[in-house]
Image 1: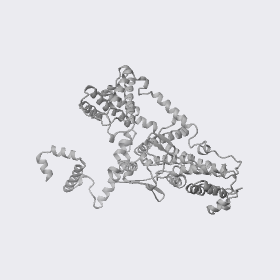
Image 2: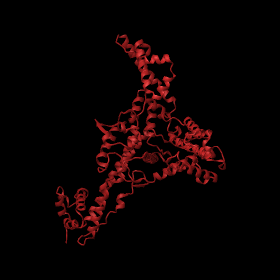
Image 3: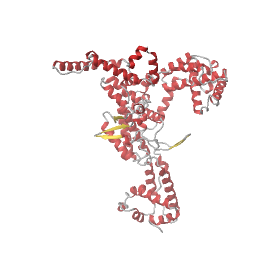
Image 4: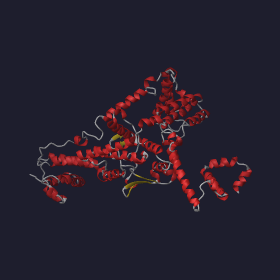
Length: 593
């Protein structure tokens, strides 16, 4: 009877093909033996070659010892094309081995795969997520629904909706293809929100509602103002207003079926009006001040959250070793650290790769190429900033290096620092654990739920904050604009990837007077600079002109010419033609000269 593992491996080699047997040897060498040789009685095989170990490895109870080791090893594998193959071939070998008449099983029970993959612990305190979700639903219920429910749609509204759907899904000479089902559902949601506002806020009866009510300019203006007060993001408001254009086209088509409905005068008029009520994208707050206040954290709370997450992931690793839950806890900890300390956009977090990190001294710098950040395609310049700015910089830097070397799986087929953690089937395909994070909504949901659970655990369930990744940009900018000096604004504006004007206009969610209260600091600095310049002048040192009044006439003319030239080339070709058309002949001769 066979006593050593090598005895039955010879038979298994005949049972399987060469490729399967080669993969099995690789699994034994890389996954099983490094941990198995730590057991008592097998240490003498350390450092020996694989064939020697196979000849001296006891066969009895081998599956009972090796299978738990294999299951714990694959937990560290996030995703690989070989992962499924290894699991299948290892299971096939174990099944064959246990069914062989010469194999002696060990009486010790095997660790079930389900228990190894799904341990009964997490870095989120038990029951916290359920509690904060119930609280969120309760708060939303107290606000009351705005959109019309399906049961509120009258027969006339349903008939109009069916006619509208048929119009959008009919291919004509003015519409090359029908709209998608997703777009159709989005139109239904937008119509339900606007009509729900009309009946609940303005008191209009359901029987008096019609889809064409969305063409009423007074209703649209009131809905936009009310939505901003309720805290709806401008993206949602813009999406709701976008449905007005196809409604105008549908109404025009009903009245004149044989005319081109793509851009007639009524549609042009409603499109022009929408541009007047929607806030410009370059100078608009994404959410209202009230909504920001509900999600705002203090800087002290941010550091306390990081302290808790740091302790939690390290404590779980110490208790349970390397499991998927521990890897997820480390990812959550470092993702929140990235957002708290840099305020970077979530795209930069999703697409952060090893090649973008550079260690300079004790500080890790992120060096993004032009295509790696939002404004890179416009400016053609990259972006650089230090990681983990703040009191925890040294410890966070050490933790990130430990994560890259020991926590993050080494067999990923990409270079991104963070990855998806669940296997899901989607309409457009199946996503697997370890895939890169592609969608913005993934991080928004993950971060907001994580912060809600941690704040509820630290400060009480009523103090739960559903902070999104973008809110950390507002938190940093508000903190700088409130407590910083004017010289700090350009520093943190560059850290956030914005100009100083955008930093103050978009992200400062405090009262406008807060910035003016910093005038004493600015006054003292200006007065000190004036005193230094006067001292320099009294000593007879050459001094450069600091204002236009001190410049010579030729220098002033040269500066103005340079400024006009820059402004002229900043205009588009159409604007330049309009300016030239508005000039008199004398002015054009002066410009040509």
